[in-house]
Length: 547
Image (cartoon, rainbow, N blue to C red; front, top):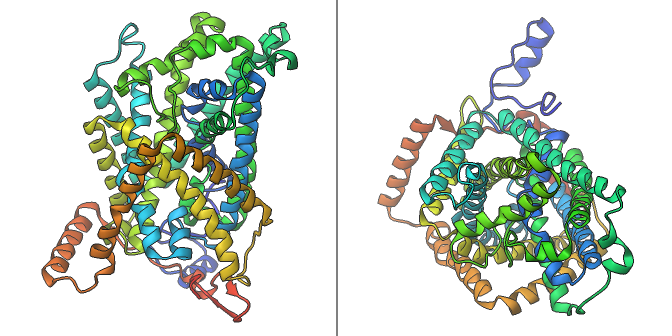
């Protein structure tokens, strides 16, 4: 299964026969990222990062803006279709430019260093630490819910538990890639089982005749006709619930046979999540009237990353606390004494989400350092465990700092716009790369209608985001553009004073000694038989797509 036949080595193989020893001589010892993500783990990375707390807290926003149950269900289905269009584009990019780092690597390769650095800057500085912090706070709030049943959990208790969870999962990810992927596998299965329970309960309600809200006459009855802007906002709510569909592209180099398994994982995961999301909403509507769902204070109204949506309150802890009410309503109404399963299910969901974000965001830091956009220490891995320990420690430290700051929701709202912007820039890059290098070998080549349709939909939603939240979008752009002087001073400026280089060298040396890390070694097999990144117009192939 995952990675057992990856052909990647971190330490000397232990063969016993003469024939095995002869083969070993051809493959010297290497310290490199191990290919331990097979098809199963690839699917769980996508599913686990998409399914966070969003499906438990987002239905109200979609229903409120769409105006009816029927339109809300259509929005959820079409939201999955749009995510599928985007993931197909990323599948082409992932096998054409098989580098870890996702959006950042593709944009850097296509548009150059500055554009890529701006995406990297906003992601590493704010986006991923803030998202991790909010998901960790959601986890701690649900875990502490039974301890504080009638009040908001104490501020310090939620922060301490969140930090403990982050430290534990950082240790796991530093210790072993296989252990991290197994945790992702287990908790993704747990998420699906939790949603499966909701779906089964909803189906039982339907079979018992409680489906009046789902009949076409009632489902599509509109008390008010939603405007185009309202429908766009409903899609925006759903699209953020589907965020995470591109995260496998951040770890492409650790996927076993990425040209086969990356697109397969996408083709399996996105339809499965869309199917589960739609059935979950049907289950909600079979058990709760639209009025009950809309009157619940559980669902935060606004836009943001999954598990980190904009709240109606100014205090994030109160907002997170109220999110549990819809799940309590559903659970207590249908599960009775077993209603405690609902908060536990959300806690398990968010725990797996933290692990997935840590795993993928650390690879983004690793890729950025390898391109020279971040300190070189972050491009090093443990000499035995082959894990990017410095990058993981940076992600964990940045998240704990955000936890201490406290205003997590304001920050995530600012950068969620940049995150959505990066999707469109990356897919626009696919079209530009087709024009720039038309004869480049592409194992997967999607129809041009796929990126064009996605970009049209993306432009509409982006326009309504700018219209409805101009301040939030503007601050997000300012945060992103602060990376411009950093890029020219830190990356573009090559003739720095010698004292700066000496300081960086000493700091890197100390970091290496503390973390026992070295630069990864190239695979001699891949050097002997490089992949066919061939521009057939020139008749040349190389190990870099810059050929």
